[in-house]
Image (cartoon, rainbow, N blue to C red; front, top):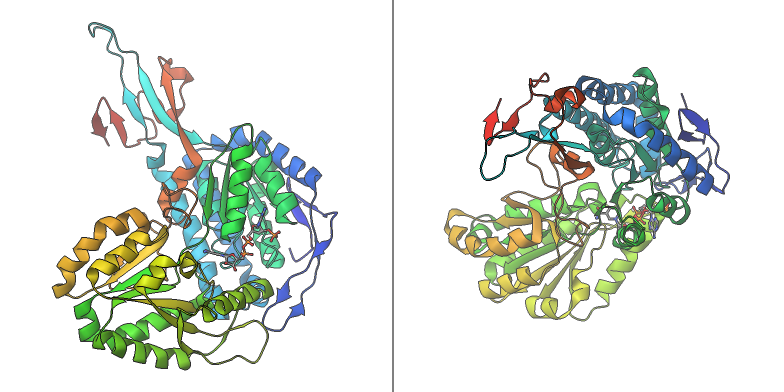
Length: 525
Ligand code: NAP
């Protein structure tokens, strides 16, 4: 294994035919070899044909086989060791420790989905046995299980080159559901993508799976991305990136003869509400915690706290004074790509030129290229409510504090917010009843509501929701992190009056897999 500059289709390394994409080390602006010639519509056709031919056999692999396959991917990724870490650091500018953590998270995620697959609970088996004597009409025998949707197109994210990319959460959950996956690599980290893609390809071969179970394509979003999403054999899409990209791909999916679901995670500013007693009792600690969260990963987390809401007064002034000091000693950090850095600077300029937003403080300037300088602005609730532009996500370490006259105005601000991945409440016991008055609104706005924590840091577990109403995502009914993500790529099928021998084991009368099932309205374990 090693970097070849090739795409991975049908178990083969396939050279692209379009202009080569080359990664740039954002810390130095140095161009990284090798080049990755982009694929064409012919490559999309090839990958989709293979994925479709692999679908029926892959989706009926046993729970054990599929789980072992996911575990093998994790082992192959771990075996890449420093080769993978070095390349991901060079392509992303992220610190080595962060990348090492991301390798661990990616492998943990794959193993967590392996555990989920083994339980079979996601099959959600329901059995309603025949009632031939029922009056006035007999009931037939009815059995339900979930099956995989079909081949899934996954768009790797720039901000998590491992955990949300080629073998990230979308791929892991789709493979766990029984869907072949075709990844459109993010052009910012083609080398990392190739290495991880090779690891998946090796696991496919090791388990004797049809080679169409996985493919990795390079190339432009417009040609390869749109080509994949419009191909009739693709049945769902996983995406993390910009609002414009997510919307464009959702529109392509909706315009198809057979529209398909797009699970696009796009834009969120993650409001944080600071309540009166919390501010009074521990305002300085809150200010330090806020800026630490804002600076994580140069603010390039989808859960970055980009908006803070509090009631004005001396406690908030003291909070702002400490926050300003913390901002002003924040070191600059390298951003992921020159494009993201440019977008960050543009967002800052827009806010700085808004007469109703005041700069509280700016962090230290960096010396190298693509340096993110932390920024904190303040505005008043009236202006925030009047100007939709003040809700725009600035992807990076920038945040806006909204000063409210009273809690009624804070509630108005909450009601005015777009959909969010998270909403955070900082409260002391004496704030509980005030906080309660916001909950109904925040449940309608966000996928995850936190108390006395910071939104950066998303646990991979069974209860996690990393999703939320538009524009946080294009489909608020699901999560892209945690084991519930598997549900995005499944659909129920009901089998009526089937002879037992024609049924898959999961729904056979004797329950040979020992699944937890709902039988005649009773939970059977
Ligand atoms: P992006 O520009 O949306 O790109 C993500 C992927 O989608 C890339 O593979 C891109 O292909 C493809 N794509 C984009 N627009 C498309 C279109 N109209 N049709 C088809 N495919 C399309 O995201 P990014 O490069 O990661 O970052 C750009 C901005 O996105 C950031 O500045 C930030 O504002 C936002 N972002 C948000 C989050 C979040 O979690 N909230 C995460 C990452 C980025 P190409 O190879 O052609 O570019």
